[in-house]
Structure formats: C-alpha cells, structure tokens
Image (spheres, rainbow, N blue to C red):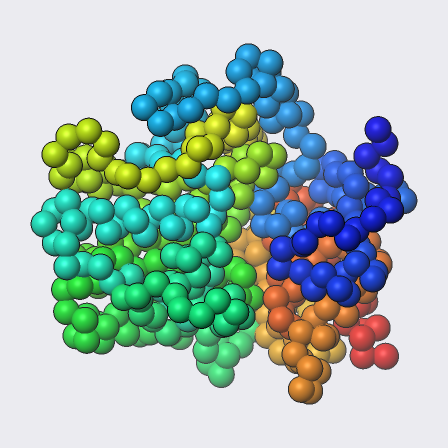
Length: 440
C-alpha cells in the first residue's frame, strides 16, 4: 500500500482539537517524515517547526527506535502489568529513573500526558491519606495552565475553552494567577524579570483553605496557552511555599521534559526540584504513545507503607508499561544520552533566541517569549475575530513549507532538537514572510 496516497474520504475521522468543518474543506495532510522534515502526499517538503506536537524531540524517522519496536514486537506484543510483569517494563523504568532529576526515581507508566496528570493528582491524594492527612483533598492549578483533557487535568487546568463545554469540574479545586505580565515583561529574553511575587498567591489560598491543600500543579513553562516562561525566582518561591505548608509540588513536564530547555527536565534547568514530575511526548519520541509519572522515593514509600496490604494504589491502565512503548522509551532515552541532545539545545539556544527576537517590529507582533528551543510569537488579533489571524499565518507558513502551531493568535514554535542553524533561519524567515503577506 502506498501510504503517501491522499485519502478520498475524510468524513469518518472526528479530529481532536480541530475545526473539523473548515479543515475537511481544505485539508493540510502530512504523509511521510524524515529528520526535521514532513512531506505532503504530493511530496512537498515541510520543515517541522513544532516537533510534531512538541514531541518528536530527537527528529523523525529514527531507525534505532523503529528497530527496537520491531525487535520487541517479534518477541512479545503485549503482556499485562496488573499482578504480572515483563522484563522490558522494568528496564524502561530503570533507564528513565537514571534520566530523571536526582531523587525522582520511582516511575508509574501511563499512555499520555493527560493520563500522567490525572495519575499525579491521584498519587498526591493517596500520599496524604496514607500519612494520616486525609483532609488534604484540594488541588491547586494555575490560570492558563494545561494539564491534558482528563477530568482531573481539565479541572486544575486554566484554559477556558477547554472547560466551557463540559459543565461541572472536579470539586475542591482552586487556581493560582497566571504569570503573564506583558506590561512589564514584553519581549523578555528567557526568564522575565518581573512576577516572582505571583507565587505568593499560594499563601492566600492556604489562609483561605487551611491544611486542606494536597498539591499544586504547574507547567514550568506553560506551552499550550502560548509559551509563558516563569519569572525569575517564581518556581523557587513556589517550592519554598509548598514545603512550608506540607503541599506536594507537581511539575507538568510533558512539553519541557526530554532536553527541550537544555537539560533533561525543566526542574534541572531552573534548579527547582518538585515532588512529582509528569511526562509523555518526548519519552518515546512520539513513536508509540506513552507517558509516565516520576515521584520521590518518600512519596512512593509513604503510599506503599500506608496500605494495610495487598494492592497499595488502586490505579493503572491496561497499557501501562506496554512492551512496545517500553522498547521505544529505552531507545529514545539512549539517543538523548549518546547524542547529548540537551547539550545541543544549550549550544543552539542563543542563536534561536536571536532569531526569534529578530521578528520584533514585524507586522502585528506584540510580544516574543523564548526558553531553550521554545518560542512564542504573539500577534495582534483581528478586531472582534480572535484566532483568525493566527490561523491565516499558520496556513501561509504551511503553504510556504513550514509547520507551526498556533494557540489563539500566538504562534508557538518547538522544533526537533536536531535542527541546525540553517533550519532556524528558515523557520523565522518563513514566519516573517507570512506576517508581511498578512500585512499586504
């Protein structure tokens, strides 16, 4: 079968997070990928400016990963991990525990970032119950945060469009304010100077709710809302307050994990250690769906020792630690280590930053934010028609051979970590042309 053929019927697939009617009237299709490029069914080259969906960190078509998946499929396609086990799941957990920040070395496998977020929230509740503080039932997220689309992650998330269709959320949830201060931090390079004080809002929530808060969950860099980089000192202050009040701190590193910022995880990049880290996407280089939650040994042992016996944590998924996903994860982690992808990011990040900020002054650009190999370019919306300009720029870039992501009227960029300077130039030159065509 020729997989590059254009399908003749688009009706059956209900596409996620997509304007289905407009897309199917004028589809943008990708049929093949290699290195830092996609190719359309017609063979047109498209530079991947988004690493797929923040996930193909090591670049497309990695033979090491494909061969590891095939080798495992030839041996065993599936085995359960409920009251049973298979060797490669334990190997994957051990390899991942070596890659995660020191101290976060107990691994619970999931299948996605959404499942990782919900799992982390349940671990936090189970932890406090196990240590005799069952009154800690409240979960705190942040405005403009994104933690997947399960009911737990949606409830602690703070993106209004993700919530409005679904009525009631989980009870006992509150939110910190977001950290976006454009009047003070516009066009900041890396971590903005102003906003560390916003973490002190947690003190107000503690005054309001007392000792009922179980966990705070934040993205170190908020991605889906349009690349919000934490102000200097903000995450450290949040860590101090959580420790002071006996609250677990969860970092959602589904986007920032796996070398995206120039370290294995954002926790290492910012020098702030949470109690729990959620991850997915880059874990397998997106070759097979997989997520994970890494916790400290203290959290893990508290939950186990707090159980009277038998199953200690009544939670899990049929595909937790799936053999093919485990094989992909091991191969992906090896690539990050052997090719020092984090080092590549550190070397390229200053060039990336300069290229991103070269768009200051381009038509409609109102702000630019960056961290590691992430950038957000915020655009002035069309009056009374939000998102319209963003989608037009996305289409212009795609027509000109570049894949970008837009969230509202913010262009978000997060390319494979294997890009070179010439690719960086092409990304921002293409985006600049799209903006100038928009202004014409």
